[in-house]
Amino acid sequence: MSPFDKPLVWLHGERLSMPISRPMPNIGPRCHELRITDETVTWRIMYRLDIDAIVLLEVFAKKTPQTPKHVIDTCKSRLRRYDAA
Image 1 (cartoon, rainbow, N blue to C red):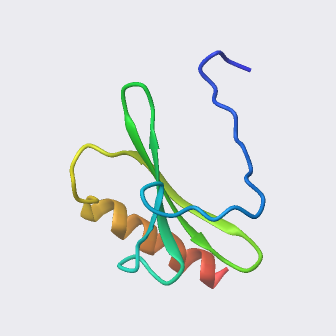
Image 2: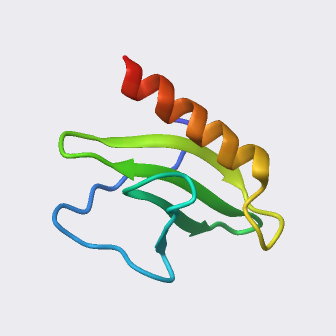
Image 3: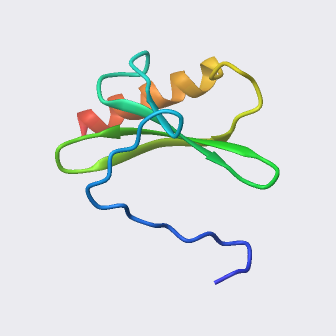
């Protein structure tokens, strides 16, 4: 494991709400944005809560107040491909 790697911690049964996670209905139903602040970067993880999975759609460094359109478009495209499979 590299010293730059970060651990993944699973919080069983815990609900995340603002300011950590917020709904993103403009991407789709059950879609959310998880906010993570690192030492120098503010990260966003876009995801959807399905019954049998948490579908990770995109991870990006947030640099503007609004989620970039290309990120939203990428998430929608990935959801279409995932749902079609």
